[in-house]
Length: 267
Image (tube, rainbow, N blue to C red; front, side):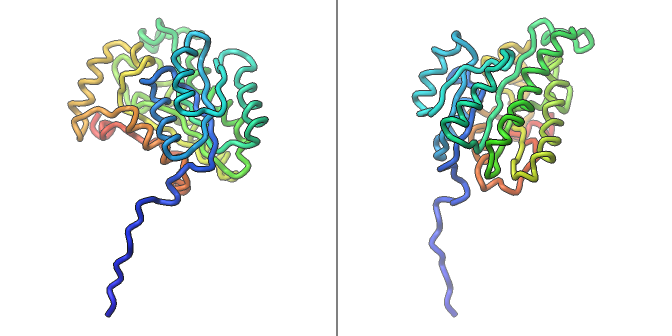
């Protein structure tokens, strides 16, 4: 009897983004979750289009775009009419297609974020929903005709969408709407082989997170209660997000992928 000892392979041919082109929205600085994801995408060979919020963000984001070799670099404030359409028009003109989109932006006015949900203003709720949720739907609509050979759409959520987290306030209902949108988009875009996911990181010190009251206490609690008794970082989130964009995840859609050292099972 011959015993076959196969030579181990060091690289999964499906776990690559070589030849794929995608848009990453939400890089604010080197601590951004979106930056960790963009770096992981680049490490797997993906070509990048990056956006920055405005002229104040540009000095922080431009060096990162250059470091990552971004093919496209443009401003995108989703509250400004026409800016999102301009980004997708540039993608169409320069690349002719799109393989993935990463949406990693969220916003709520400070007074509404720090107050009770029951006291949230109509204007504050509308802005939070527009920036944090509806902008993802808009991106999906603009990306769909460019994903001629299928593709992936990923957005960033948080455990506060599913359970009440102190100090997360109005962003809890907003992220819940975002996660529900992921499921509906997955069904609607599935026939075109466009997969849709939410990634739900544990608490990470980012500029966006700094607006949440008592965030340091939230970090401490997450580290204490998570099964791994540690926090995650942008590299952890980036690794999972990049994997979801590869063909290795071709059998997955409509999921919320938790990257939180297991906190969500005990939180």
